[in-house]
Length: 87
Image 1 (tube, rainbow, N blue to C red):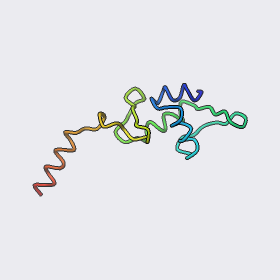
Image 2: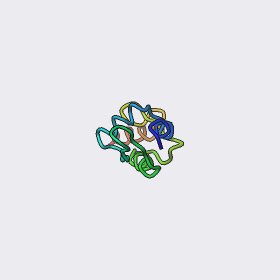
Image 3: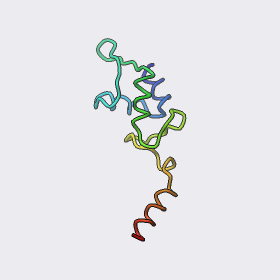
Image 4: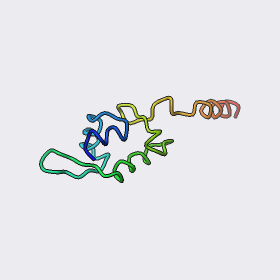
């Protein structure tokens, strides 16, 4: 996949993908000096490495690669905080 296709698949910007490539957060294949291509396995590895995320369809990341707040289970966090406060 190209940068644009991969960015659309992961729902991140192409610049984010370039950053991940530079940081070696995501695997890719280099074609020539500048062009990069991604396999579906490379992209799925990034998806599976994100906590609480299971499929690319539910994948929405912020620019820093963290899950958006809407994907966080707020009820579980509140219940955990209540239990810790009562302990």
